[in-house]
Length: 63
Image (cartoon, rainbow, N blue to C red):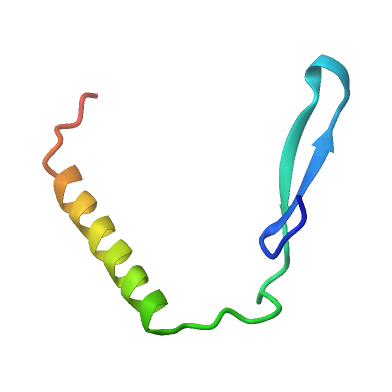
């Protein structure tokens, strides 16, 4: 896999083989274009993270 986010790299061989993702450098090229749809989706995701954070403070610590 080779795309804007990065590429997979195979590490080790045999039964110990695994893949890791090597990220591309920032800023991305071509640059990300923010349109109305993208901004709405990011805003909705941000609100969702806020809701999760609000709920998480109500979960008791079990230490």
